[in-house]
Image (cartoon, rainbow, N blue to C red; front, side):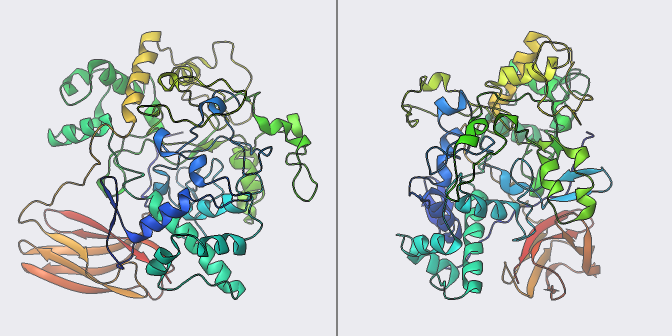
Length: 535
C-alpha cells in the first residue's frame, strides 16, 4: 500500500441552545452531552449494556475487561451467551474517518467505520453516526427489538429534557417517519460526543513532542534513522525518539506508510491511520467465542453463527459482496481478508490508579499494571511487542497460517530485519500515544494582525449561511468550497479586496447534506473552516 492521504473530516454537531456542560476539564456542548448520555446509558434488552461497556474511556475507548482481552477478545452482548465476531474497535478518533468510497487514483477503498467499513456514512453523512445506530438493534450486542423501543427508552430517561433542548421538541414515535428521523438523531448525537475533545483530546506525550517540533519549525514527517538525534530535547526520550525514527523510516519499520504521520484535518496532530484496508496475514484467534456460536441461538431459533468453527472472517470483501453497487461487488474477491487500518492512538493505554476493571466469574484477572489488551481485528495478538514482532518476522518465523491467505500484504511487513532492540524501541514510541499525559491539544492561536475566516451565519445551515472574512492588508483573495473528498465545489470570491471585513453568502441549495470546507487563500495565508449542511 502506498502512502495515502485524503482530505477527511469529522462532524462536530452543535446547537446554540443552553450553555456548555463541563465534563472534568472538558466543556461539552449540549449536543455532545446528549451523545454522552446516550453512550453511557444501558439501552439494551436486558438493560445491562451500554456503548461504554465495549468502548471504555479508561483504555482508550475500546475493550476494558482484561480477562476477555487476554483470551477471545470478543465481547458478549446484553444476552450473556451471545458473542459477536470481532474485537471492539476504538471509538476514539474514529470520527475523523471519511465517508466510505473507492479512491480511483490509489485503487483502494477508504473510510467508513467498523472493521469492515460497513458503516459508510452514506446515510447520515458521517460514518461514526451510521456506526452508532448499529449496536442498539444487533441481537449479539444491545439486542433491542426495534427502533421504537430504543426511542421509548430515551424518552423515559433522565436526560429526556436535554433531548428537547437540543432538538427543540420531545421524541415522537407517532409515524414511521418520526421513528426514522429521531432514531437518526441518536446516531448524530453519539457521533457528536465521539467527536468531542473528551474523546479525542490529543493529549499524549507524542502530542507534546509534535507541538514542540512545530514550534521549532522541525517537520516530524522527515524523521528517520539518519537524523533522529536532531529531534532530541523536544519531549521524547532517546529510546522513544529512536522508535519514532524506526517507525517512520521506509527502509526499517515502514509503519508510517499506513499509520501516517501527516497532520489531520484542520491542522490537528497525526491520526496514525490512512483509513484504508489491509490483509496483514493475521492468523485466526482460536479462542474467539464466535466459533462456538453455532450452539447459541437467536430469538427466532437460528444459530448466531451457523458455520461454527469453519467460519472465516471475510473482512472488507464480505461487505463488498453484499453491497448494492455491482462494481463494488465485483471487487469483493480482491478485498477478502482486509480490515480497516486502525489509529494507533491509545494502543498502549491502560487503566490508571486503582484497577476498577469489571470482574468475570472463573476468569483470572491480572493487576492493572499488567492489564492485557488485544490487537488486530480478532484480538489474536496480546501485546505491542508481539504485534511488532509479527510485523517484523511473519514470513521468516513459525507463525500460524493467515486466516485469509489471499491478498496478504507482502510488501510492507513480514521480513523487516529489525533487531530485538529496534522492536522494543518502536514499542516504546507507540506507548507515547496514550492520551492523558498533558492537557488537551488546542489549535494555535491566530497571529495578531493576521487575516481571519469565520462562519458568520448558522452552522449547521440550510440552505444558506454567511461567510465572513477579514483581511489585515489589501490582497488578492480566493474563497473556495470543497467537499469531504477534497473535490472543488464552487468559488465564492475571487479578486482584489481591501483591508477589513468582507461577507459573502454561501448558497448550498443545489448541494446535498454533508460537511464542506471553506478555504480562503490570500497573498500570505491559507485559512480553512468547516461548514455543515443539514437538509
